Amino acid sequence: MADFTFTDEDRMFPVYCVTCKAHVPRAMSNANSGMCPTCQATQVQLQATQQAQAAAQAQANQAALAAQQAHAQSVFAVRTGIGACPKCNSQNLTPFAKQHQDNSKVMTGCLLGMCCLWPLLFIAPLLGKQVTQRYLHCNYCGNEWFVG
Image 1 (cartoon, rainbow, N blue to C red):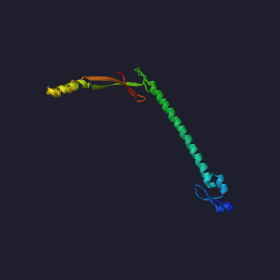
Image 2: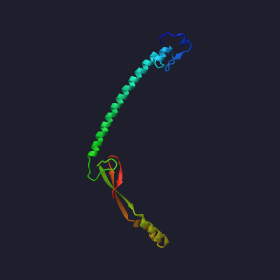
Image 3: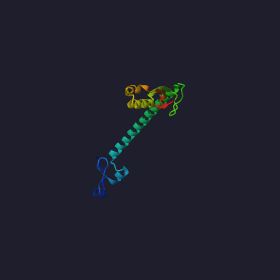
Image 4: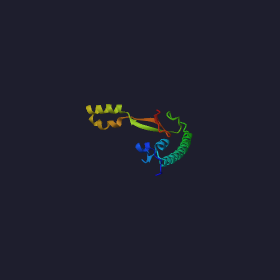
């Protein structure tokens, strides 16, 4: 600890460093934002280190953004010729189909089978008509939508 010159006021109403709790003269504490000279120097070094880290992080973020934009341009460059995504306007699309069964005839067959034709109860699920619906999938944003 350095030798400081303390006034009578400093001795009666001591002021302490906010970081290391060392007794410092009031004038020095006011000049250094409540810190002793040692803590003030450490604080300046810490701020310089944080600024250097922030600059390095900003540069890394900028490089990552440039790579992401290059990837997006390569994805948008694939044109399948079947339209564009309504969400992101990409033309890199993949068509696919989903099949489901029309249940209205199945329900009618089940009700008829339960009432009088109970042997048809086992055949009724096979009576439904398979319906194919076509969809498109965007390879960039993952959006799926019904085409027809």
